Structures are given as C-alpha cells and as structure tokens.
Length: 233
Image (cartoon, rainbow, N blue to C red; front, top):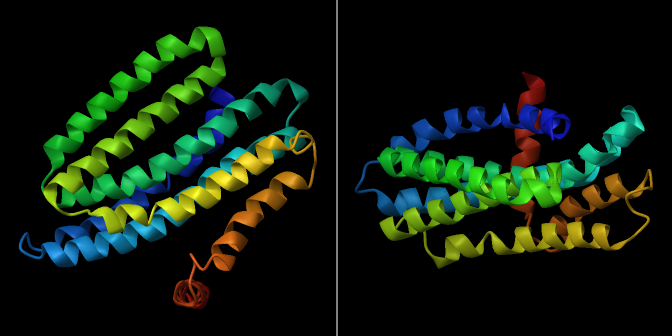
C-alpha cells in the first residue's frame, strides 16, 4: 500500500495549487451573487470532473503498467492497489474543488465536520477490510471515505442552493465514460499483461470525450489558448 501511495501522493501535492487559484475567485463573490456563484461553480465542476476522471484512469491503468516496467515483480501487489486508488484519486480531485467552493461561502465549520467523518469512515472501513483484502482493503477504505465526502459536500451545497440537478447531472456523462473505459479494460483478461493496452485504454478516454462532444470546440480552443500562453512564458 505504501508503494502504491507514492505516485498518488505526488499527484495530491498539486491539488492545493488548484485550491489556491479558485478560493480567491469564489470568495470574491458577494453572498447576494448566488446566481453568479452557482454558474461559476457549475463550469468549474465540469472541467474538474473531466480532469478528475482523466487522473483516476491514469493512476488505475497506467500506474500498474509503469510499475511493472520499472520495478521488480515483487511490486505487482502494489499495482492491484493502484487500480483501486485511481478511483480515490478521481474522487479526491473533485472533492478538493467542492470543498474550496464551500469554504469560500463561509461553510468552514461544515467542511471540518465532513473531514472528521471522512477520517471515521476511513478508519472503520480499514478495520473491516484489511483482514479479508489486505493492502487492497486499505485502498477500498480510502476510496469509500472519498466517496462519502463527495456525497456530503454535494448535499451541503445542494441544501444551500448553490447546486441543482443540472449542475450535478454534468458529472454523469464524464463519469459514465470513465467507468466504461475502466470496465472494458478490466473485462479483457489479457489487458493487464499487455504493454500496449493500458496506455491505449487511457488515451481512449479523451477521444471518447471529443466523439461524444462532452469536450466541445470551445473547450478545446480554451485549452489550446492556455497552452500557447504558457509556452510563450
């Protein structure tokens, strides 16, 4: 489990940078600007969901593949844990955004309670799962805790009126595409042993986003403009 967490923790180091960029933006909106806040949050959730699913698939599919290439066979057990932790990475990436938005609207106390419950779920699930599943049980415990946090944060902003059904529905299609890619990979027996299939399945996700028009021309133009601007710097 420790070996599997090494690349995951490196990814988590970048998430506070997203928080630092978004918190001033959300907190600059006055309380009476709820419609503007809800609209901005919906767009941020959409982009963050695309990023979260992509990162999760990268960890679940490419992580074990890279581990098998670089490290000895004794680390294969960590590859199984990485497949599970990819789900937790996707959930954590989305949770960071929603938590930042909630704190920017003065819900720090509620977010702290959610964090406390997350620890409780993580420890309780670990106690229940580590004996039958070993290191994989710790991975599932972390994933379950992140899933509980996501549901609670969504409920918190829903009750406050900052989220509605249209905003939450935006999570469904990217998540469905990500689940479809992951299940397709898992159901092919030879996929884990192949040197080509894991990265090919990971690449399939952005291609499906374009084909399904989940990623629009406007989105692609925005990303290209951001890349050109960064390159000029």
